[in-house]
Length: 250
Ligand SMILES: [Zn+2]
Image (cartoon, rainbow, N blue to C red):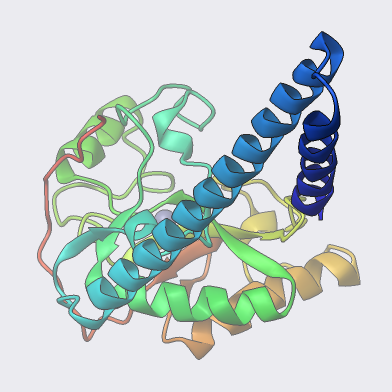
C-alpha cells in the first residue's frame, strides 16, 4: 500500500514540475519519495530471498531425513528447528558442578533422531515441544564423569558403556510452545525417589505432565527406566556400539 502512495505523490510532484520551476523544497520531496520507493523495493527483495532460503533449508532437511542412515550419528538441529536445548553437562549447572562438554550439542543415531522428530510433532499438536538435557555422550566423557563421581546411583560405570554412549538415549523434558517450562515435579538429575515413575506424591497436574511425556515417547518406541522421569532409551533391539567421537564446537 505504501508503495502506491509514494508513487502517487511522486507522480503529482513530477506533473507539478512541468508547470513551474521546481523549488528546493519540492526537489527534496521528490528525492525523499524516490528513496522510499527504493527502500520498499529492497524490502520486497529481501523478503523474497529470505522466503527462498527458508524453503531451501526445509527441502535440505527433508532430503537429509529421507536418506538418513539409521546408525549414523547426526546433530538433530540439522534436521529440525523444532527442539529446544538446555545441555546441562556443557555448563556447571549439573550434579557434578562442572562442565564436562566443551559446548552443548545433541548428537544421536539416525533412527533415534527420526523417532524424536515424530514424537516432537505429536507434542507440538498438544502445545509442547521437547527440551534436550543430554543426548549422545562420548565414552571419554563418561569416564571423566565416573572419575569425578564414581557412584553407580548417579553415573553409569564406563566399563560396559551406557545407552547414552551408544547414541540411543536422551534426557529430556517438555516446554510449552511459549517457552514456559512444564513442571515435572523434580529437577533434572535429582536422584531421589521423587524422580521415579512410580512416585505419586505430586499434584494431579504434575503427574499428568509426566504422563504426557511418557505416553508421547512410548508411542514412538522409546522406553523408560524406573528411576529417572527424564531418561528415554531407544529399544534394545537397536544394539549400537559404544562411541567416542567429540563434536565440533565451531
Ligand atoms: Zn539419561
